[in-house]
Image 1 (cartoon, rainbow, N blue to C red):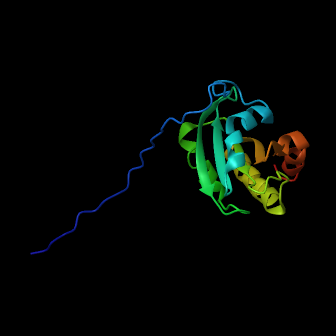
Image 2 (image 1 turned 30 degrees about the vertical axis):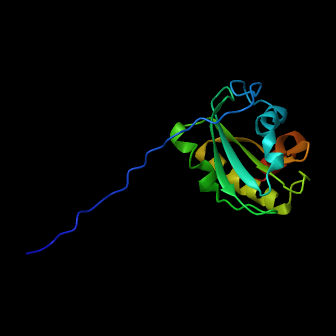
Length: 160
């Protein structure tokens, strides 16, 4: 008599939960500029560890959802591009914006931030997904890769 064990396959089920935001937060508005993103996620400036968030956008740049992708240490956060895109892909978004904080308060991007953004650009480009911006939140301010022209420079280095 053979006791055959059942075979299983995993089924993925996405669940979303609502998160309360400030009453004047631009939730239903297009995130067409970094200031709007900063207004929505400015509470990151109070975090003691780096936190990386991916925002999925529709064709009108309105947020479909966001996901906290990774929580790091006081001076670093690590995530692979696939982890950033994991929540976005099932929603078939038009584009994404990535946000993270610098607990030191200085939003100036590190070389690691630039490498990460460049790698993510390569991956989003190959998937046909727009990568609009990477915003770093510090104390009372932010740095935008798009606004500074750094995003355009990084995009120009990607082979088509």
